[in-house]
Image (cartoon, rainbow, N blue to C red; front, side, top):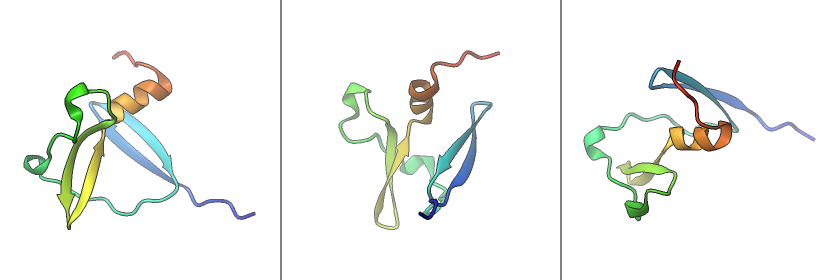
Length: 79
């Protein structure tokens, strides 16, 4: 069979570098923080989204990367 294409997306947040192995990247956009709204149903604080916004008539969901990483690799302590 044919192997799926893979890309490594490297990010930096809060002086920590993370790498995400993804099958593909559709696009990368810049968002004005003033246009970001709380995600729907965010009252319980249990979801994986930190916010949502609109870009070219599409809903963009902003993922809580720290929460996802904490669940995958465990809590990290600062050095």
